[in-house]
Length: 310
Image 1 (tube, rainbow, N blue to C red):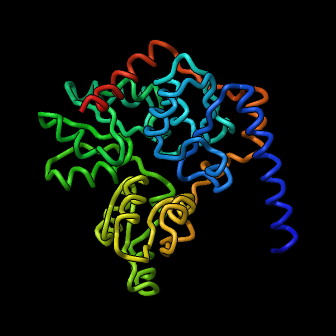
Image 2 (cartoon, one colour):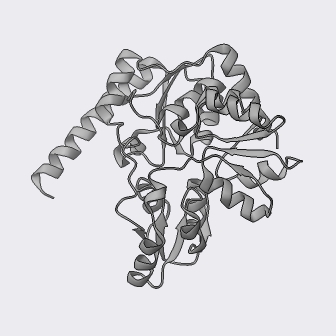
């Protein structure tokens, strides 16, 4: 092991021990998304999909939730756990896709199309959820859309996920022009090149990917869905079409199997902003704190509850 790597590991170990002490003092729980850095996933009490994590946090008796993810995820935790302190270790960890729709723009759309039913992906701000009828995740988007009657349905903000679900259901759905900048970088050519290099590998991708990428896949699913597929598959090799952070969990969950990132460009800079020293500092200062105005929280929670009731 080279000197630099050993120093890094020693530093990680020291920080992890500091965090463990602070966590107990603060009665805190640390939750991390699958796209976080490996060392962040390793110190977390729970690692998972964004909504799954917020639900998990709501069930615990922790007084403080340290959410290692991006802004909308911490907001979801604040919506479901109004009695807890929710901390986002880096205040600048946003989501460009969530920013592609705002409450004002959505209200204007609803005025133009009276009676439209708004399905919002959880990757949205609390204000946008408050203006929506029902939320969905990447794993239940099809089920949520299926539950709605009528023709006027608007899916926000991810047109790739919306189109994927609409194609499965073979029904017309209005799509908001938004996308995940990280998943959208993946091209069909990337998949074809990876298949050439790894002919025995199954291609597994997230539905936030472009339509022509999804068409090349052997399996399309949420982050948790991709992990479960790899675990249950008899295949030993996989080409992975989602953010690079998932590889850490895939290697843990599937020892002996090989995973190849479909493109080196599959890195979300916002997800990588969280570091161990920021987690430690956030626990010391109980900041940056994420809060949601009560009026918005109640409306946003109603949209989440409708989804959870399905």
